[in-house]
Structure formats: structure tokens, C-alpha cells
Image: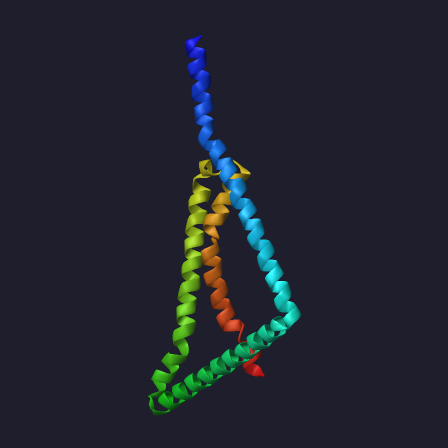
Length: 167
């Protein structure tokens, strides 16, 4: 009988931290709801006062200034490159023109060769893939999000600015 009471008491005491956490989370949630309601009320009052329109105007103005600054910096960099290359030997200007494409080719070839290597390893070790989940996991390793973002950055660099530069 004593062992039954001690077991029941142990179970109840083990639930005590969870019970305290439950009441604490309920209190935290009600506090967060009150804060959200106050914030919404404040934003509505600001909207009535016209602050939202002013904030939008300031945001547009700062975006325009940053775009103008970026364009001026790009033009200054192009002018500097042209001035330096006027005085350089012809092989230097040819080399300067091939540096970025060469680095791009090396990087893309590296990505392709790594993917081929991983794919070949998976192909030669068929025990690695036993289900569709394994295939998805391996595909995520071969074509990782970081790798795809780097490749997307390269493609965006080379092809994304072409329409802007032609205008």
C-alpha cells in the first residue's frame, strides 16, 4: 500500500513542473495578447493622424537616394577602370576582361564536379538509398540551398544586370 502511495506521489510530483510551466505559459500568452492589442491600437491612432503616409514617403525617398548613390558609385567605378586601362598594356586589359568570367567558370566547374562526384559515389554505393526519404536527403546534399544560392548569385551577377545596363 505504501509503495502504491509513493508511486502515485512520485507521479504527481513529476507533473508539478509541467503544471507550473502550463500556468506560466498561459500568463505569458495573455500578456503578449495585451501587448499586441495595445500595439494595434497605437498603430490605428497613428494611421488616423497621417503618420503612415509620411513614413511611406520617407521610405520611398530613402530608396531613391540609395539607388542614385549606387548608380553614381557604379559609374565612378567604370570611369576609374577605363582611365586605368587607357594607360595599361593590351594584355593587361585582355586579362582584366577575363578575370571575372574565368573565376565564374572555375566556380561553376567546381560545383558541377562536386555534384558529379557525390552522384557517382551514391551510384556506386546503392545501399545508401533504401527509400524515397534517402533519395530526397541525398538530393538535398547534392543540390544544397547554399550551393544553389551561390550559383543564383553568379547567374544574377552576369545576366541580371544586362537589361539595366542596356537602357
